Length: 421
Image (tube, rainbow, N blue to C red; front, side):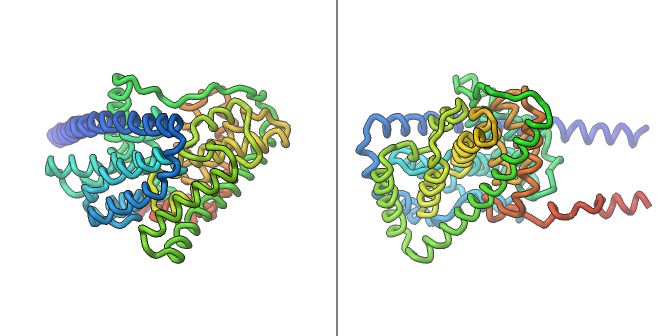
């Protein structure tokens, strides 16, 4: 009885301690995430109202490079640093938060093609890690603080709290969800989401239309589109990695690379005759999930994003992933006999799944963005895209053992195997 009471006491104490820590991190991330979202929205609005800001993009790239050099951080500092810090029990540089905040703001203000989630993960991870340091938690617990900070700020920025929780639990290593962080993640994420809602942030949500009845024909069409999205995911990831290596090899100087990248984006924008590929492209995503996209949209967004991020501009790849997947689905879906709006939704979620290797988070993303009316079809699309996208990933430091090919049986951790024997 005494052992039972001691055990209950230990679990209760740990539970209450993590609730307090998670609420602190979640509240901080909710405030910072809201401020960041407001700044990016203003940057987008100013860019649309003042088209000449595009011509400042090379200067913006130079400024970003100068800020990173001034703070003595590599221009390549990004989400992968969080992964290595969590696995190696290391510190996250304090400079990461202001640098990614300012770098993403400048990129969006001047018209670079990038998302916001890279900034969300870096801001949240830095906040969580530093709050852990201030509260003098154990180094293993600081890793958890970093992780829950990433999810909390993702939740505040996108208004998808369950997706944020599952994403940070899944993304570190394929096939290994960090269940030990489940309670801290959900408390921090929901706190952050609640703070952002109190501050009148609007969550991401789309009206889903054109949903087919669940029958064999619909399953086959969704499966074919998911296969194509898996191929698209591989191409997306390979292009991002290749362009980063290529640009650093051709233009070794950070300042020259940033200025050249900005000039290339200006030239491409003038050649295509539209500003639809600058910034995050939220308006184009909304048009696609309403059933309207141009055949070239997904290819040009890929090109714009690869140049922007490989040359040192800041942001992230997930919103461009949404853009590419939605426009691709909208164009290809009708060729398969699907409604273009519904195909865009499938394309968005399946491409996100293939790029991140996070099938459970992707399924919940479909629910939080589109509702549950086509859940079965989204699950099928995620399963196929996850399996067929192989070991491609947006993140260099995501652990990707060949588990997708090892389907011969279940393996238990060693201690479980021993106890079973």
